[in-house]
Structure formats: structure tokens, C-alpha cells
Image (cartoon, rainbow, N blue to C red):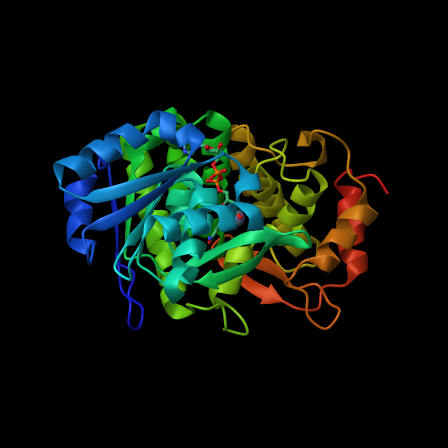
Amino acid sequence: PVSLVGHSYEVLIGNHLLEDAGLRIRPHLPNGQAIILTDDTVAGLHLPTLEDSFRRAGIRFHTITVPAGEGSKSFSRFEAVMEEILTHGIERGSTIIALGGGVIGDLAGFVAATALRGIPFIQIPTTLLAQVDSSVGGKTGINAMAGKNLIGAFWQPRLVLADTAALGTLPRRQLVAGYAEIVKSGLIADADLFAWCERNGQAVLDGQAEALGEAVRRACAFKAGVVQEDEREQASSGGRALLNLGHTFAHAFEAEFHYDGRLLHGEAVSMGLHMALALSVRLGLAPAEDLARLDAHLHALDMPVGATDLPHRLSTETLLSHMKRDKKMRDGKITFVLLRRIGMAFTCRDVATNDVRALLLDEGFAP
Ligand code: NAD
Ligand code: ZN
């Protein structure tokens, strides 16, 4: 359960939930009508199963398919989807169903938040990243020319249905990317989850059903706890802001590759986690043994850790300028989430640019 004031919902996690998704979803549809939004990759893999289950449950639905990829989180795609559902004749009780990864969840959620000033919305995440992170918490949105996720709304789903069997078709790179967010959760506030990852990470990346189910359950429980405490990211320290551990670095790496698939968000996060802990050690805040432990885990699973894992060499000054532009910046200082140790993160507003510069140079980035 995710218990929020006025809108609590459940996250159902299981193997092969998609087959009878219709029966599970039916009670949540105010008027029995649904609009499924998916991308063309997922449509070829999992849409028929969902549509079948909807037919068997007597749900009236209309399906909209958009191109796979970050490009669909755009104003033009948002407009096209919105016009299509409005032309199709939706009512206040019509429910948007997001079937896909974080891109579909973010786009569908934003459409739901704004159509008729808000209609119900259900998430069926099909990437590991979406199951452990983006489908829970109610952040929805699209990208602007000026940056990612700059247009959006908080809009909570009525239900999240995470079928771990759907991850069976996911390429390993995408599994690794989602797994990085699980490691992140452990580092932030759950040393026990991190230790679990050390024992079971390989099984998760091998796609073993039991390990995947447990990983998704633990990561969702963690995220639900954080979101319950700070639904709209208003806490001045701690709260949702801690979920940005590693992300100031990650966003800077990602920006250099223009979100074109050469570097996935989760791959950037894997490196960002290493950088955040390395920065914490450099500032004398965290023990070096913890950094060695994190690096050993990331290396064991062949996850990206350092400058040489990137498609090409990046420059320190360019990365710094990206970090300064990140929307988490206040009063001219970069806010970082740092670690005291594995399992204890905190926000720090006054990290000197020079320390970050020295770290990046030490880590092998070009001047
Ligand atoms: P994605 O939705 O682009 O999915 C990655 C790729 O996997 C796509 O090509 C997709 O078609 C494909 N795919 C999806 N499910 C599949 C399956 N079961 N089998 C095979 N292929 C499948 O990307 P993502 O990594 O899921 O999500 C990234 C997005 O999520 C970003 O836009 C990011 O900003 C957003 N995000 C949002 C939040 C939030 O809180 N709202 C949090 C984190 C990330
Ligand atoms: Zn992330």
C-alpha cells in the first residue's frame, strides 16, 4: 500500500499478473471504460495479453500506441494523444492505463492529470526501472527544449500492477539500468536492502522470478515510505530529495548523450552512485571501505562505474556546467545528496565546486 492523504493505492507485484489484469482492474474503473497507452515495442510483446484480459473482464477500451523512446515525452506527442482521447469521447470516469516503461508512465500520467482537469490513471510498468521507481510516487511529465521533466504534475495512480514476468522480454542493459535504482534505495536508507543486493543482484539480472519479485517488493516498499513522508518533495532536507542520490552526476552524464540511447538513465545512475559516495569520502564524510564495497558490487555485476565506461570521454568543465543548470540548484550552489555510510544519505547544500572539479579530474574525466 501507498498511504497518502486522500488518495491511497496499492502496488500489486507478482509473476504473470497481466493474464488476469482485467479482473483486477475492473473494480477500479468508475465507468468501465479504459484508454490504454503503450509504445510500439511493448505493443508487440505484452499488449495482446492485456487486451485479452480486458475483453474477458468486459472492459470497454481504446488503445493508443506511440513510438518507443524518450522522444515520446514531448509536447507534440502529448498534444496528439490528448486530441485523440478527447475526440474519442472520454468522460470524467474514463481511466488511462499506462502499459510500458517510465516514458509511457510519465506521458500517460501527465495526460491523465490534465485531461478534463484530471481523470483516473493506472500504471502497468513493464521495465524494471518503472516497476521499482517511476510507477510509484505520482510524478508525471514531459520534456521541454530547456530540459527533461520540466513540464509536469503530481498525479497519483489508482493502482499499480507490476508483473515481473513482463520483464522476461527486457534486454539485460535495461535490467541493469533499473537495478541501479534498487542499489540506490539501499544506499539511501536501507543497509539491509544493499546487503540483500550483494547476495541476490546476480539472480535479479539473470531474470530469476523469485529474486525479481523480492527486489521489486523491497524497492517499492522503500519508495512508498519516502513518498508517504513527503508526497510533493517539499521537505527542506531528507524526504523525496534523497531519491536524487547520484542523480546530479547522472543527469550531467546523460545530458552529454542527448538521451539517444547511448547511455541509459540507470547506467548514468550507476556511475552517479559511485561518484556521490566518492565525493562523500573525499569530503571526509563517509568511510573509504564503503566506497570499496559499492564499487566491488557494481563491478561484480558488470555495471558502469567510471569515466572509461562511457561511450566517449567527457570533460570536467562541461559536466560542471550541466550540474549548475540542474533544476535542483538553489542560491547558486549545487545541492548534492551525500552519504555518511551505506544506508544513510543526507542533502548537502554547500559543496564547493572545486571539490567536485577535483573529484572529476581524479576520476579520469578530461579537463
Ligand atoms: P522506457 O519507457 O523508454 O523503456 C525503455 C525501453 O524498453 C523502451 O524502448 C521500451 O519500449 C522498452 N520496453 C519496455 N518494456 C519492455 C519489456 N517488457 N520488454 C522489452 N522491452 C520493453 O524507459 P524507462 O527506463 O522505463 O524509463 C525512463 C523514463 O522514466 C525517463 O523518461 C525518466 O525521466 C522517467 N522516470 C520517471 C520517474 C518518475 O518518478 N516519474 C522516475 C524515474 C524515471
Ligand atoms: Zn533515476
